[in-house]
Structures are given as C-alpha cells and as structure tokens.
Image 1 (cartoon, rainbow, N blue to C red):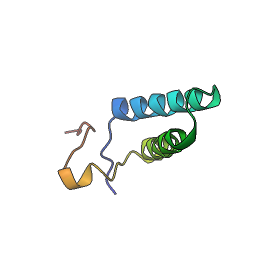
Image 2: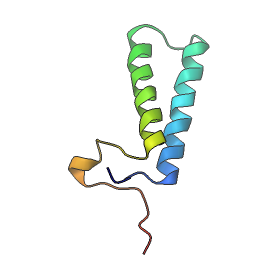
Image 3: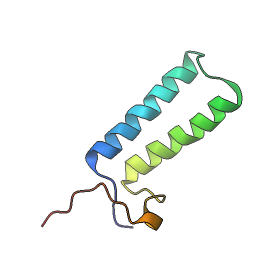
Image 4: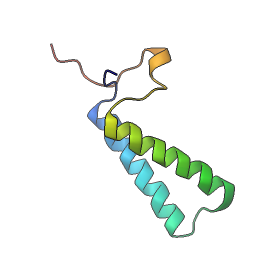
Length: 68
C-alpha cells in the first residue's frame, strides 16, 4: 500500500470527522443520518491515520506530493 494522501487532504479529513463528532455529541444530528455520518467520520479518521484512501486507487488519484 503506497500512501496516496497528502498532508492537506489528511488534515481536512480529520477536521471533517471532528465536526461530525461535535455535531453528534451536541445533538445536532441524530438517527440514520448520524449513523451514516459516523461511519464516514470513522472512515476519514482511519484513512487519515494510514495515509491511504482505497477510493482513490481505481481512479489513480494521489494528493501526495512526490519527492524527486
């Protein structure tokens, strides 16, 4: 697994996950929407932690800058 996520991409995903968590814990989102957003937040945190996004692979996308 080669990393395909750059620093900005990873940072933004963590921020989005935190926002979703805050919305959930303050009661702004609930029910099915909260479950779906919670799953997305967990996926964002996991992909940010490892620096690899499986949905980028089929499209050949990489936000990571190559060092030459």
